[in-house]
Length: 422
Image (cartoon, rainbow, N blue to C red; front, side, top):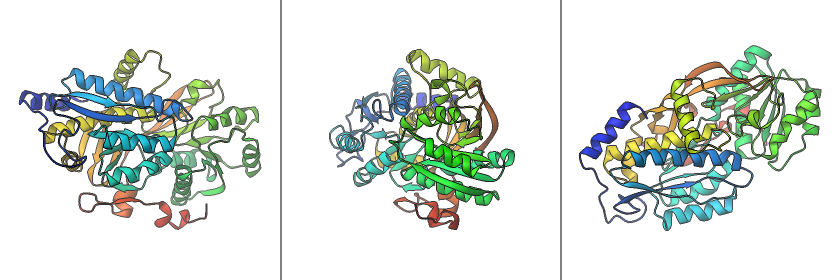
C-alpha cells in the first residue's frame, strides 16, 4: 500500500476505532464475526485442475492479511480467516460459500478462479447480500451489487494485445478457447475487437477443459494459415497444447489473455514451448519496477518454495488491502457501508502500479501491458497503457450507485459481430 493508505489506517487506529457490535440481522452487520476480530473468507483452489492458479491467490491473500495484522489489523482488531480448499469442485464451492456466510459469518469473501465457479456461487452471494471479491481476469459484463471484479476484463486484456498483434502480424485470426462461459464470451470479444480493428476471425474452436490432445486443432490451424492465433486456454490439461504445437512445428505468433500470467507455462515448460506468445495482462511477476520487486521479495520471503506469482495473486493482494482501507474509512465492517464506500471509487497502489476502482461498476482501471515470451522464455514488456473497464460503464450503462443489479451482460447483447451461435 502507498504512504497515504498507511497513514490513513494509522489515523483511524490512533483515534481508537473499533468494530461496534450491532443487532442487525444477516450478513450486513458491523463486525459480524465478532467484536474482537474481523473474519475474511479466502476460498481458493489448492488442489484439482486449478491448483496452479489458485495456490498463488491463496498465498498472496495470506501475505496481505499477515501484513495488515502486523500493522494492527483492521480497526484495531486482528483479522481471522476461513480458508478451506474447494479442490476445484464447483459443488464444494457452493457448500463452502454457504458455510462461510451462514456459519462463519465472514465479513467479506474472496473465492474462485474460473468464471464457471463465480457463476455457480453468485446466486448464493446475491441471496445473502454478501460482499464478494472475484479476482480472476475474466470475460467481463458482471454488473452485481455485491460482487467486485478485481481482475482485468476480456475487453481490457484483449483490447491491449489484439490491436498489437494485428499491427505487427496481420489481420487474419484463428481463435482457440476453453469451452465454457469464459472462453465463449472471450471469443465473442475477439470478434468484436477484430471488427473494430479491421481484422477477421477466419477460424474458431472451443476446447473442453478435459482435452489434452490438440492434434486436430493444430492441423486445423495449419490448414487455415492465419496471421496469428488467439489462444484462450485454461487449466492444467490445456497446458499440453504448447509442447504439442512446438513438436508440430506450428510457429505462428500467438496472443493470449490467460496463458503465462495465470499458469506460468513459461516457467514450467522447457523452451521454446512458449516462443512468440504475446499476452495482454495487468501483471506478471516479471513487471520491471522497484515497487513490484519489493512485493516479489516479500512474497518469496513468506513462501520460499512458491513457483510463481500469477496475475490473480496480486489482485487478491491489493483487494484485501483495499477492503481494509474502506473498513477504516467507514469505521466498521458493516458490509452495506463498505460497499457504499467502495462505490465512491478509490485509488490503489498495487504491485502492478497505480490503479483505481471504478465504483459505479465495481471494476478496476488497470495498467495493461503486452508481454512477450521469446525462444529462451525471457519476458519483455512490449507495450503498456492504462485501460479502464469500458463495456459496463460506457456501453451497458451499469451504475450500481443508482440501481441494484445482479446481471451479467454479454457482448452479443450489444454487438452484431458477437451474435453467433456457440
